[in-house]
Each structure stands twice: as structure tokens, then as C-alpha cells.
Length: 505
Ligand code: NAD
Image 1 (cartoon, rainbow, N blue to C red):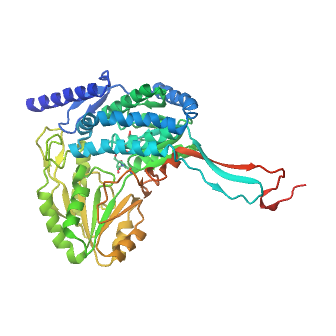
Image 2 (spheres, rainbow, N blue to C red):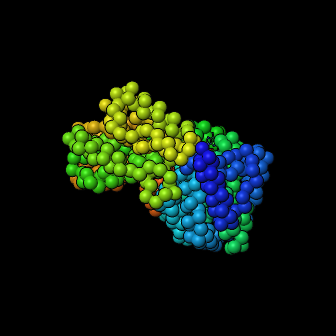
Image 3 (cartoon, protein in one colour):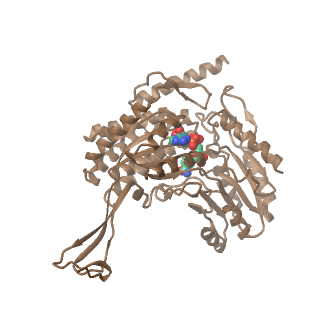
């Protein structure tokens, strides 16, 4: 026990040092604990923003918008460019803080910071490409065109599992689009949020921009709710569970605000008889066990052709038995901790439930108690199921991979689509006809061939259908969600012809 206390104290000291290195002041103690899933201990504690603070933060962002919207987009990109430089300079410190707060292994935490840098670069390029279309007018001497304009204050609500990348996806693009941002991070990861906020404000000072373009509010769902209900917030971009989206969407709609929802997934991969099994096993293990199954795109359902199911399960079980689970700060560890006790309880409940529904736990699921009573390390579980039962259709945010079998590809695609979520999907096959049939048939926002369901690049639009919320973030033309479109008709003739040939008077 003493050893655990000492270990948690060490981690707390490390968090302080990292904040210092990132230029952020160690926060005054308050009612919001910043825990580390590595030991289960408290790193630091922070104040929670009261409704009056949230109101003031939104007010500051709304005032800053009035000026920021008039700055030319390529000039606004200067702020994002400076942020990217600071992220490069502080990459290791920020990544380590992600590991401390979210429990990600080093390479994944570094990857998350790299994703921030990537999206900044994307946004900088985008600042000269916020294109509007010009279309032929039906009237002589007229020009018809669409122009894109800054939207207003964007409220960003983010989840614990990508504590910094999701913020960057939204913020880098919102800023070049001329919006200002109020960020409500997960209450589970307040320190990484503080670090990002500090870096962005420093970038603003460095380039002579108004630091008020970014506001940070800290606290739980009630703090997020204040953002949701405020009519000054033009767009609420919310990432988290379906439950959160179901609470947020009607409230924003009730005040005719805009919502961008990135909610839960229940992602599947089909493994066809022609699949390269060696490659499939590698792809499946990363997608299902990586980040301890705590990615929105984590692989949760494996739909395997009956003819190869036994062989594949055997190989997966062998690969699972080799997975190093433990302290994510240690080199070589591939599976870090679950975020908290609640996540562990949900995993155990799902495992018990799956057995009750006729499932067979092939391996994993057990807790490894090494780094303290409040740290939850588990072996990723592989469970064979008789079919797509009620439990399999739910998202359990933990490393459980359910294995189902199929006979015909149509049936496999129907199983893939037979859940309420629609985020990510993939197929392992060397048969082009099967691959194309799957790409046309999957109802998800992401459909891959010969790679797993997770690990998206920033260049493509990210998001999913159905209860995943329909939002798209990051690459492609996702920027349009952060701007408003105006259709302009310009008459450069001396006549006033009406559309549809209407004669008036
Ligand atoms: P969560 O829904 O518990 O919390 C997410 C955020 O929403 C937090 O900041 C929380 O404080 C806030 N929140 C919750 N209820 C709210 C309400 N009623 N009003 C306003 N704010 C509210 O999710 P989590 O446990 O942090 O993250 C895991 C979930 O997020 C999983 O379901 C995962 O699939 C999903 N997720 C989705 C994506 C995606 O891009 N689709 C990305 C990451 C995580």
C-alpha cells in the first residue's frame, strides 16, 4: 500500500513537472480530481467552473468572434501554424501527460499528439481553400454563387479517450473558419485540457491574435449542459457516448442551434475465407486490444466465415496470450489500464451477460492487480457467441471482442449493419468482388479493406451514421460544419428578370 501511495505521489510530481514544462501553472486545488488510471491515484485537483464562469467564458468568446471573423482566413491560419510549432516543441511532454491522465501507452499517446499536428497542417492549407461554388444563373447578366462565412462560437465537448486530438480536430478547423471556441473537456482529463489551452493562448500571444478566441471551462456534464443551452453557441460539437448525444441533441435543436455529434460505435470486421490470416490477426489484435479497447473505433465484433472460424480463433487466442498488459509508461507494454472502476464493472457485467446469452469466453477478461487497488488492468477478452445477441449489439467500452460466424457474405454484411451504431467497419478479403460488395453494403461512416476498424487518418472525414450521430470531423470537407453558407445573386445587367420566368406587373 505504501508503495502504491509513493507511486501515485511520483506520478503526481511528474504531472506537475509536465505542466510546468508545457507552460501551464499548476492549478489551485478544487473539487475536480485529476486521476491517473495508471495507479488509480489523484494527480492534482482543480476548480470547477460555476454557471457564472461559463456564462462569462461564452461572452468572451462571443465578443472575440466579432473581430476574429473579420481577420482573413490565411491570416487566421497563422495562429494554427504557431500552435502546430508549439505542439512539435512540446510533443513528448504533452504525450506523457496523455499517458498519465488517459492511460494510453507511449506510442499511442505520441500518435495522438501527432494527429493534432497533422490536423493543424490540414487546417492551415484549408485556410486558402474555403471554396464556394459559382453556378450558372438562369437569368442573363446575373451571377449566382455560394460564399462561406464564419459561424460564431463553437462549443466543443470531448470524451476522455482522445483527450487532445478531438479538441484539435475541432479547434484548428474552427479557428481558420473564423469561429471562436469554448471547450468543455472530459472531467476525467482536465490536465491535458489545461495544457492545450495554455499552448493555444501562448500561440495567440506570439502571433498577436486575441487569446480570447479560445476559452476553457472545466467540470462535469452539468458544465457541458450550460454550453448546450446557451443561444450564443452557434455549433455544439460533442464527442462521447450515445447517451450524452441523446441528451444534448434535442436541447440544441430546441433552440435551433447546430449540433455535430461523434458518438459511440460498435464496430465490426468481416473475415472472409480468402483473407490473409497473418495480416488479419495483426489488424484484429491492434483494433480490438489496442488502447485497451477504449477507442470509439475499437473492434468489438468479429464476423468470421464458418470455414476458418476455429483456425482464426486459435491464432487470435495465441496472440492475445502474448499481449503485455501493464504500466503504459513502461516500454514494450501494449495494453494499458481501463480508465476507472466503472469501466471495469461494465466489462465484467458484459462478460457475465455474454455467458448467460450462450457465449464462451475463449480467453481474457480477468483483472491483473499490480499497480494498486484503484488501478484496473485487464486481459483483453475473446468471446465466441452463438449469434448477435442483445449484449453484442451494445457498445461496452472495454477490450471485449465477440466472435460470430457467417456462411454467406450478404449475411455477414447484415450482421455488420444489424446494430444501432454506425461508426467503423472493415473486411479482410483478397477477393475484389467481396471487398466492393462490402464497401457498398456497410452502413457505417468508415468502411475499410484489409485493415482494422481503428486508426483513421486526419485527411478523411471522420464520423458515423445512425446513433453514432451523423457528424463528420477532421478532413475532407468537414470544415463546412463550422461555417454558414450564403447564396448570392448578383445582377450586373440593367434589367430585372425574375427567376422561373415570372412576370410581375
Ligand atoms: P461520455 O458521454 O460519458 O462523456 C463525454 C463528454 O460529454 C464529457 O465531457 C462529459 O462531461 C460530457 N457530457 C456527458 N453528458 C452530458 C450532457 N448531458 N450535457 C453536456 N455534456 C455532457 O463519454 P466518455 O465516457 O468520456 O467517452 C466514451 C464514449 O465516447 C464512447 O461511447 C465512445 O465510443 C465515444 N467516443 C466517440 C468518438 C467519435 O468520434 N465517434 C470519439 C471518442 C469517443
